[in-house]
Length: 306
Length: 252
Image (cartoon, rainbow over all chains, first blue to last red; front, side, top):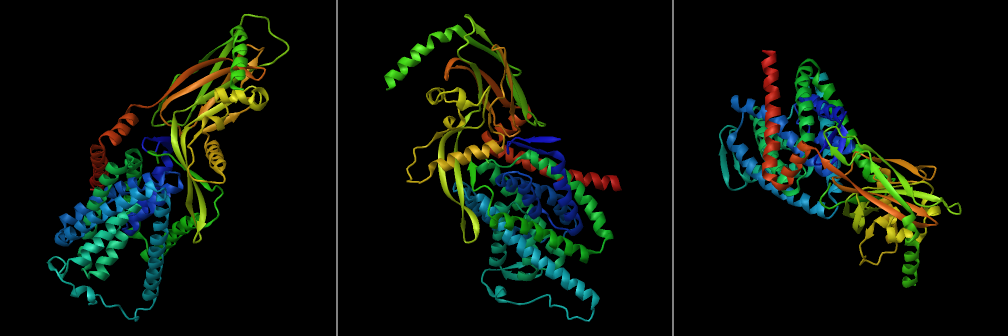
């Protein structure tokens, strides 16, 4: 069954869309990742214009993280103060990202920018995940291996404008969280992702936040930055396609529910390796498209359309 | 030269009264609904003749369907630092978003280049290139690429021999509007051709519109983007939170 997307102005197969949403939802339920970094490139592959894929992807992030953030707020595992600082940075980053996105669209280079950022970030995350899960696998086989220190004091803890974050038990400068939040905002606007994959490691290793508040606080920031970015895309370039979003969201919610249950029953380490390989495969496909001599050297853009 | 050409045209116009084309479409309205997969339009008609059928020349029929024109930018990729990047661009002032030409016989065999120019029939002539300021060596390559890409997407079609003409009177053809067409008024021209020139022309229109919901969403997105953004967020919250609440309810 084909479904007509009024903003993208083309038809795509409804089951393909439900499959993309469901498959990514399944993975996100299994691994607790947002999945925005898989949805957007998969939309490119099925022929959705990159601009629409990015803006609609970020709308889908709102749907996939909203119930999580509500649950964490109820359990009080959100550092609201840290979350707000990260969010302020995120809003600024989103504005910068949107400005850059629209500029590149005018220059006809947005597809390249989006693809390049995906190659770089998926490559880094995939490689880190693979390394991390291989190490975890080795550690589980060799219980005597040395463990890493949780807290490392670095120059980051000596910056001015210190602020007390009681829920995280931190007394640090506001600049690192502001900058981290900003980076995530830029990525949300350009790549259509939530940015949890950058935010979570940055909160643990850079800011030194305790793990119990990391997920809740990151979801808090991601949800609001994604909501703001959706509004910005809708207002500045009209590229959010709600018809597309609904299909992705329905598939995603169902997939995530199944994924959560599957994830509880399976061994995480081996699966994590598979996820890392999948991320690297998507990265490889996009890189291949950029590097391989194309069969058609020309592309057409119509001003005002995607 | 031009005066002579017009003079010839004037002479040619007189016997045109003798043969007249009347045509109709299977539908004048195409609605881009949720499940739109493309639309097949039947164009049919007849030739009314108030003279004996001349046996020294052959009658041909050309059907040209044209979608609303749009400006376009054509980009060419080149390798920069190992990756393929858009480097050169050429603007086109107006190119039809859809263009299909169907004929009884190959277009170049039945139509003189002058007649093609006056009536803008072949695809190449339907595209208005911008007066190029850049001293490019190959401006034609960009327009050819535009035609090639749109032909591959089914947006441009040249179909020689696709019009069936029976006993020099009844004709019919089918034009497929693909799923990726844009909204607007499409013109359908039916031309009668004899001795390389157009002897009569009939024009009718096809109205391609988004259906009610799609129309409403597009209008909202462009006219009230703030409200549209809120709608997108409301739907995301509703489905994201609502569905997981539903699952929790079902499980308990």
